[in-house]
Length: 444
Ligand code: NDP
Image 1 (cartoon, rainbow, N blue to C red):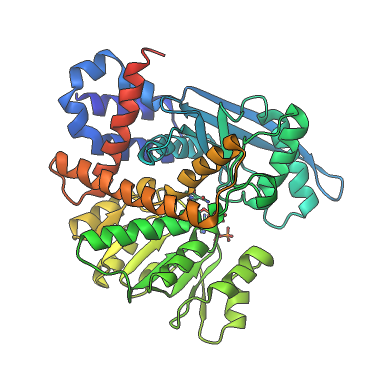
Image 2 (cartoon, protein in one colour):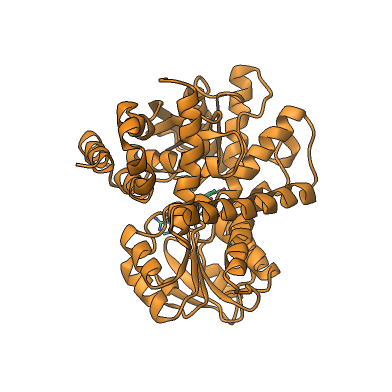
């Protein structure tokens, strides 16, 4: 049996009930097969893949907190410190009822390669909790965040592990988490990114993942002789990534016509009104029915459906496995040109394969959504220097980083004879740097 297959089998056996983690490992190792097989004897001797797929360290902890009625609740907290070969662990915190150790491990594993691709010195990690901030009062969210940080603060630090936001963790949660870290450690340091601008946050961090997705997509289209201006887009999600993807798409002359949340979706043929969407989601924290109520051109539909709309570009920006084979078939039937992932692993393995086989340009999230973590690393740099940069400086660096990520992935794919396969290219480019650093640092 080949080394790749052996390690995939091992992971499935050693980590039962973690299907998302299996999926992420399979996707990465399958696409690295050509590199691994060329070095199989040495990699096997060094147990390189076993070291890569096993986190350096992982924590699971109890998070007790009291609601407004005086009832005590207990949630579970996680932090997985996956790989520190190229820098301190870096990756977001997700608060969502679906969170479990398998989800955090899949995200942490992907994060290693994503962070490597940015060209910045950051290792891979991820964390979170099964706590659901939806419907909770600000005081309840604060109580939860303080309890979560009371345990987490022992394991993180500006030079050790620097968490950030993800699903369910935005500026409000990062603020409460930072306050509690400072109180417990007595350190005013850049231990979290995505902070508010008044206490060490970076301009353009809020916009970075969505904007970065569009900079990547624009470059990918350009290198394939296609102009993004005038293209219609289907976007899923209505959170941080989706909102700023929609905003930048409009700035580049494209026309996003959909967005969605976990209960329904909007089709707005006039183009999404991004100011209204921000008001509904960022200010009121309301459902998309409020968007439809305020916008005569918009249709609201219950459930799932953005991938049935006839568009040129599809930008999944909500959550994992939200674009399946049936969705991919709809997109191909509607002659979509490109699918670019804003979320982490939103496209199933079967759907990705189908899209690529049908000649659709496909941008994998670990490359195309890396703008968020890249800008987080720029926030760390500003915190260390104690000097804030302007929006324009950060945005210009973000653009350069995204264009470089595209070309690194493109070049790596070409080098191994997979021209145009940006999944393979991104995995190879991310992997090569991590392996080089791991080899140089010995068996640790
Ligand atoms: P938010 O919490 O801001 O928004 C998530 C959006 O997706 C919401 O509209 C939410 O709807 C919807 N959603 C979440 N879970 C589901 C589900 N199970 N089914 C349907 N819809 C769902 O998160 P972000 O925008 O920050 O993150 C979105 C994705 O992008 C995630 O995969 C995240 O890992 C990834 N990502 C985020 C980065 C960042 O900088 N924020 C960086 C890189 C990747 P509802 O409000 O109804 O729950």
